[in-house]
Image 1: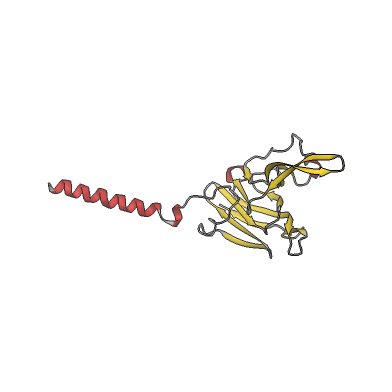
Image 2 (image 1 turned 90 degrees about the horizontal axis):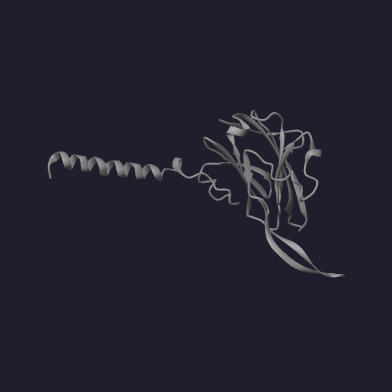
Length: 205
């Protein structure tokens, strides 16, 4: 083999090896998927915030998005009302996650949907999350016979993805109101983090 061809082959092999090494680097790992799992966040170097004895929040961001993911005990619904005050918003917004997604101005709770079939649901812009999943119907005995009752399932964690383009870069102020957490006494409770008059500050670059 001519020396020039041998040299070219060595360069190609070395370049391929170098690129394969880069693809396995932690800095090149894929961002989270909104599937209700927090497992990948520690590998991505996410920030961990203790919200409650039973709830831990993971915070991760890349060039385009911010991800929030929090776990909760089995049996919880852990629905969320999160106030977001960010540079890209005209006013602070309440982002709601339960079996449905929706948003409304934080200072105008009367604008929240009042019924489950309201057309005001699913009006969210620049963010998404895994809602509590509808899981078909079951029949329940009543005094008048049988009736259909909706079944619900929940993921192991609540996961939210927010666009930096929509919410803006700079300082975000967040307050979490997490509801229906399953306690050790089998009673459900809510937690507000931080307290009612404070916000969790997140630097978004």
